[in-house]
Image 1: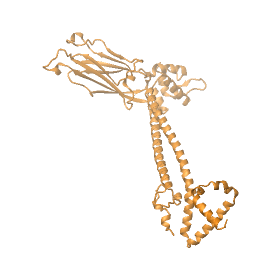
Image 2 (image 1 turned 120 degrees about the vertical axis):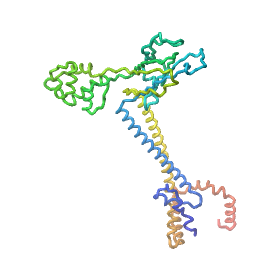
Image 3 (image 1 turned 90 degrees about the vertical axis):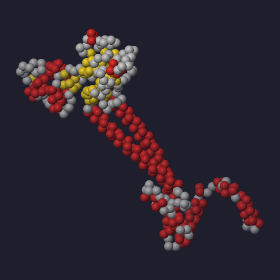
Length: 425
């Protein structure tokens, strides 16, 4: 009798990926790796890889969602401006080798970037750049110097597709010049609120110090309704209940004695006095031609509030979300296919491997294996006789066309000849 250890595929040889409920049914009669085990291991490894990928994408989605919420909670950005200039062909640079064909010149460079948003070009934020030369005197011009009595301007054109992060302006000159640079930002239609409006926002848990006219009207109306500041009898706003609204009402007339005002009058006063005018952004700078470059010496940060910048960023994030979702959908589809394959493998295990394991397991546990085999053969004979006895289990025409008779025709002829000679048939 064959040793039990040679028939049963040791559990210790199986992959650790095999589930305990399945591993006991895995069986192999040879030393070669069981094909079912190999396929099952490949399937489990792939499933682990997919689970890891899904978990990573889920974490990315959560992190990106948090970033998006933080972006909407704070729409402010920082625009960093760099001012510098270089000098070339200056007398002190040429020293004794002065080339009359090379005029002394300077190049002014204005650069800008929104911190944390490298994909937003500086030119998309600027509507106009104006450079004014202060206290310029034509009589002070040296030979080959440009006339700087007129301002230098750059205007944004909607039909111009050229984008840049830095603007270079070159002129011929050999003297230091004091200039004033004015930047006019585009797409910024918000203004800073006066202090009473800021205090009203704080009462409502809003940390917002600027906005447009519509934002101002909305926050005042919401504040009045939220705190029940309208007198039901007169329909007027009771200013005695809110000192900030009283301060706003007195902006039109500081000697105002009444403690009530209509909503229409309050809105009119607010539109006139509650929005501070946007101050022009300007820089004072000295063009230096007595040194090679001033790069890195002048840097300015401007806090801006432009929802369009955040919209651009949000659109890019939404595009990434769509990409992640499409990847998850494709992974789900692949998981479904692998689950079907897994079911097929498990069905194959149930149909082929488990009965074999049950037989050898019972055989190895019997005290008298010969008696067990005898009973097993008798049971199988009964089963086979019952199958053969059934009409639908035996097809004579199918048996006649069996490959057995075709492959063994010679041997069958000899056997039939012997039977004929002996008179048995």
